[in-house]
Length: 301
Image (tube, rainbow, N blue to C red):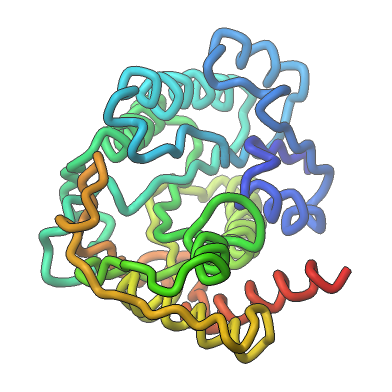
């Protein structure tokens, strides 16, 4: 099996390049090799590689900048994804595409299910929803995986930001009125490998059906609870000096004052992916502990 991974230098793409290796030949492309701002080049690129599976972890991810760059965000997360989906269909390849909790407005009082109507409240969410829609309209073989609050030991993410700020400040304001499930990128990548393995078998047996699935860690917390857990584990693992335990100050989303609105509720129902693929990610605290252990190992190398 030949697997193409896009966004290879991103926090998820890096893990995918490793998690998918047991399945076959992995061709991992970074932005220099796979530029979504030049989608006209994608069909020829896909034809030259002729993959069996395309795992698309590339995209425009600057949530706040997207408020001023919505056309660019939509071109990358929507238009280019549609061209990729058409190229995948022409190649007879399975397309695995990642989306986000930001396709919802966060107003629901319970976890979001896949069949809940999307209603994004920011430009980034609208651009990601455009990608979902076009993948489904192209109607090749696809799996859309919506994820939430993704972090890793590398890249720009909440975990690394909190560790950095803890070394610089005596107090850190943290949003306390948004809820979700922090999800480690490696767990997403490992789950993706399992999904691809099963889906490839289903395709060979002519019994595959495309679909949208929610993939997130078990449990839920707020950004404040997430930050508290980061500092607690970091202190235990000696990732921070003993005297560097900043005070976390709870604030509201409104007080945070970022350009892009954020959903208050980003919790997912993950029953569908468990029924279809037998996948259930560990509790978010377990993934966080493993990620921080990875960061500790990097510092020791």
